[in-house]
Image (cartoon, rainbow, N blue to C red):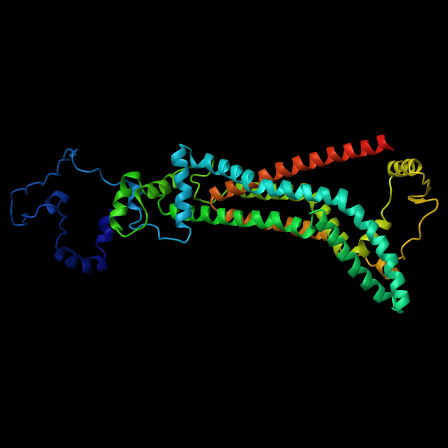
Length: 427
């Protein structure tokens, strides 16, 4: 009743003629009718429904369809590089030895370090020991003699104290180099030869391995079956089938959590391991750097070496050994505090000026150690951008250096104990 009363209102009655004259909406034909090409709205017969094509059985004689990895495969070979011959030769070794690249990189690193760098490190260690045991005592004795002779000559010539210091430095340095050459242990050659041998090998091996990883990275999405097709696309390429297969094997080799050796370690575990091993090497090798610094200072700056030696404290055991040695040689020693002097000493060399005693030169060994520590921390960032194969090479090389320095340090301590026991027994 309410609806009829509303329809009877004047506004609804005015709109009703227009509503009745509007044509009825026609429904769209079904999808099957639209899919037919011969469908006609005037036809009363239902259109034929086109059936979907039945799946055909695959032809085993035809090649397989490409997988997802093939869709992203490159359509060209890696560009030739400067280190391509060396990297191809390096990658051909594991296949001939039936080794994986994961095992080949550490083994090759240990072998070349043992064959090329270890002999020079042993040579350096022997020269340092010979300088400390044979050359340095002679240098100190000659410096005392040269100081007296230079003082007498400068007094007769009427020279000033500054001129005397310059003359003493010149004569003492010349005599120290002569003694070192006679014993075949020049400090400069001892310090420079091992780094000059190791650094070029390290840099070259890193660049060659990095070049191999960069070229193999373009083959990550390539299947072994599609490698010959890449060679057909570039008939003038210098790459052979064997070299291309070796690059693909390197790209398909994984290491624990790293999916491929040619990719960086996104977890940063390998770069952190490289930096930690570098820090350990710096701390262990600090003794070798200190010994080489003392040898270099004894020759390059004889006056500073004399000042440092004069202010160096003497332990109680060393004082007892010196007293016993002096009594055996017929030269009794008198111990005064921390210093030990003969009862009838020879005329001492002229004392250094107060400026030389008060002036403290920066510790070169400490500066070098701090610089190397900062470099090792910065090297973590560089290792984070390097492929995993390069990080494994760096870790193996640093581990070899760490073991080598630890063994050398243990041998040095053992030899020092033997020398002290020999002095005690002889004294």
